[in-house]
Length: 389
Image (cartoon, rainbow, N blue to C red):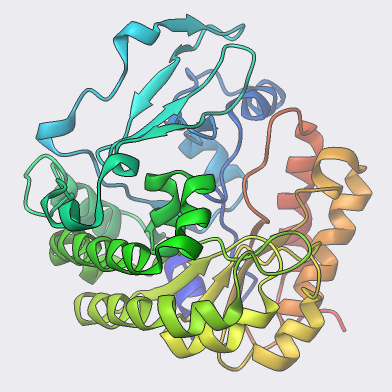
């Protein structure tokens, strides 16, 4: 099969020739530090580029993607012309030991300030303009909208060439409603406001929903016919249980997500995945009811996230993508530990299709390069259908 055929068969709950492989997105990417070590092992000489600044993710070279038999390729939206230079000049810049330049701070078009000290590897939320906006002024806040030509500049050419000149499945990732709301407001104050001013938070959800419909609508007018998968990040779980009440999700957030997903499915036939880390077992029935087709990244090291249980209880209705252990096996285990994780996840989630193999979230800094290579190697060796029983 071609990569696109393989992914599409798996996404329709059927068994392709082998388990599809993904790496390289915003939630299944590789830290630039780890990737540099991988490139050195593989003899790849290209300059390392950053594709996602907050988490320090590298743009994975086409040479590496082909060596690893990766079946997916990603497309991205750009900022609008009205927001082309988000960096905070007065906070300055620094160059790390790898020669890569970073600005200490930058803004998103939603008014969130992200900051990274030179001693850190990651950016954290450092301020949010929305915190100073009162309920009666939410309508007047400059919510992002679709239609700015800069946002999708070059998109039609890029996605058509990717679709017509390659045989890879085309993926896209962007925000949903809950996680995005606290990301643009600031987590601590947001959680307090959920309790103190629930009407404010619900109106915030409504404004974000309107904005996403506008921005995604214009994007999908161009990219929708070519997409195979659209991932919406929306973290609902912690390591040990739900981040918020499942009842609150069902009654307050789900109706809005349902509207968003129903809209997206008028624009594309792509499968819609929720990205949520942690223990989300208690949310899954409502995730399915909201219209999501699949779950990413399937953090099986979290509470109540046994892959065999997930497949048995929800495998007819839900696709699974990810699951290879990034908490223990990849960073701290041996190559054999990684191979065992691959075999375990393929054995649990792969039968009858419906599984795309990928790291369970991003591969972080200082992960041994040989462990990453072992993951891809074992995925090819063990992932052929019919699977070993």
